[in-house]
Image 1: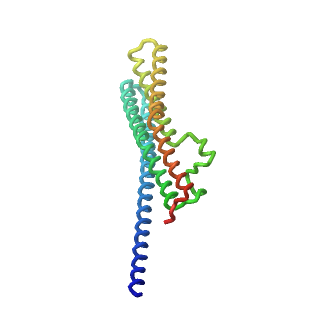
Image 2: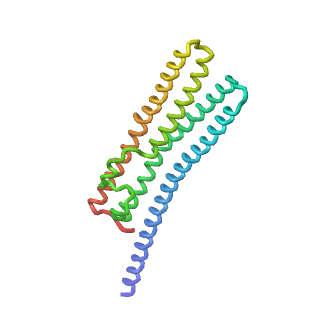
Image 3: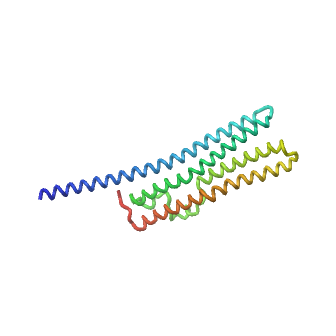
Length: 220
């Protein structure tokens, strides 16, 4: 009888240790996913802040020049355009990471911890959220696309002042190239990364819905 009791105690301890290990595992994964998503978001925002300071400083410097130096302005606009494309590329690459890791944390919370519906950040049954089609990533992409188009316009006009004698032709060329730049950057985002983001959200939301409907969530 004593041996049976001892064996039962050992079995209970083993199961408790396994349960604690599983709990710690999902807590660690949850924290890592969430911290990575927040890190990428912070990185994106920090670059945009630095970018805004640099753009404002350079444009202010050019504005206070007593004598206009066209060559200096062209170089400044080329630099600002390259810097803008860097920011655009950073946002383009980071958007999918933020979406994947932030939604995975939601999936872990629902499927393994049984988080109630009212506490979900991404409520899939909310009509308001279903109607929401504009994400934070869209705002960043629009901002960098607009800024890139602005610098293309300034650059084209400055170069046109040198090589194109007709002011009307210079303005028309500038407007066309500016519009092409803006539409190209917007379409590039909508045709590839945004489509992937929507697909990832849909897949993870479907997985969360299956966990909730099946009632297979295990409280850890």
